[in-house]
Amino acid sequence: MVEFSLIAVFLVGLLGGVHCLGMCGSIVGIFTTQVPKARPRWPFHLAYSSGRIASYAVAGALVGAIGQAGLLMRDAVPVQHLLFALSSLMLIALGLYLAGVWGAVRRLERLGGGLWKRLQPFTTRLLPVNTVPRALGLGVLWGWLPCGLVYSVLLTALASASAVKGALILLAFGLGTLPNLLAIGLFWESIKGWVQSPRVRMAAGLLVALFGVYGLFKVGYTFYINGWSGSCHVPA
Image (cartoon, rainbow, N blue to C red; front, side, top):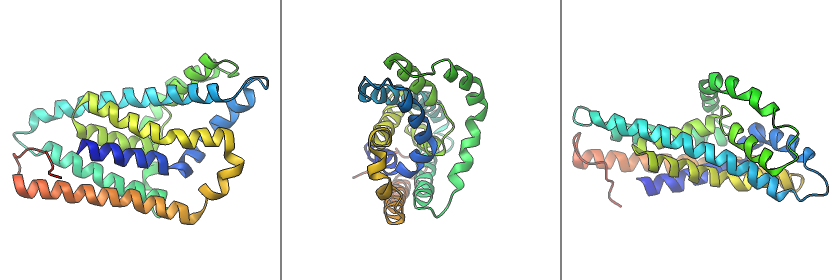
């Protein structure tokens, strides 16, 4: 299931360009204007995204460790079966959100409001973003910005029941978002019409939702074969 999750969350990040535009597009735009004109933009954008993805990976490791602790209950309830099923349902919700059909995922963004209030003041100390280290630091902080897309993927990390696997899942998601954030910062005027196309949003959303449906099928099949106490290994 972990290999399946890595592919699925990478595509979630890659296909979530419309969401990235709304959440991070303005942030990228702000520090893009602060990059010294005599210097190339690439190092700044890569540093920003590297910091952001590193924060995602740390969050994934923490949540994966919590999931691992939850497996102590596996003799009483099928914890990992339920977590994988829940993460698959969340993939379906994400797909519907990306397709513009259902926006319930946005409600998850309230969960990190308290933490973000504590971190946000530190972002102002890194402005203007006129050096690469400042861009890296800003990326590390902005990686904790409340985001329904990230929180949904964290549920998949929780289901992995491993700090290492949780970090890898969020790393895969972060790498999926990388092309979008680089494009927004460097080529947005050229690609915005394509990304904002309703047909593109619908196709991307349906593809993500199908991953969720497939995940539910595999979890259901494993549960049917192995029962409550069976392993969560899902046959190919």
